[in-house]
Figure 1: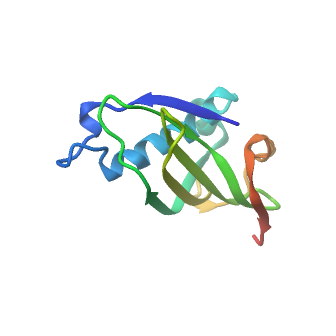
Figure 2: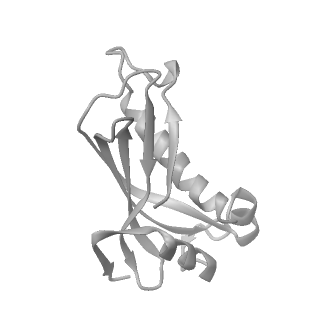
Length: 144
C-alpha cells in the first residue's frame, strides 16, 4: 500500500480551526503525484510524453475533524479503471495518527494529451504503474 504522512500546517486551517475543505484536495493530489514521481513518472516524464492527468469529479466525505499540527496518513487506492487505462477512479483515505479514518476523497480522471488537448490512452508505463496500486475490495474494470 502506498501512503504519505503530513503534518497539518497553520495555512491548512479554516475559521473553525480544523483542516479546510480545499486542503484535503491539495494533500490528496500531492500524494497521487508523489506516487507517480517516486515510480519514475514525475513532471519531466509527463512533459516528455505529452501526457497529464485530468480530473472530472472530486468528492470528499468528511468523517472526523483534523486539527492543526496533527499528523495524518494518506493512501491511494484504485477503485475502477478501463481496460486500456484511459479512465480511472482513485480514492485517497485520510487517517489520523491513531488510525481513525477521517475522510475519503474520490476522483474520477483520465489522461490528457497536452499537445492536442484531447483525452487519450496513456503510455504503457502508466498502465503498469496503476496496476501496482492497491485495488479496492470491489475494484472493477469499467467501459472505455
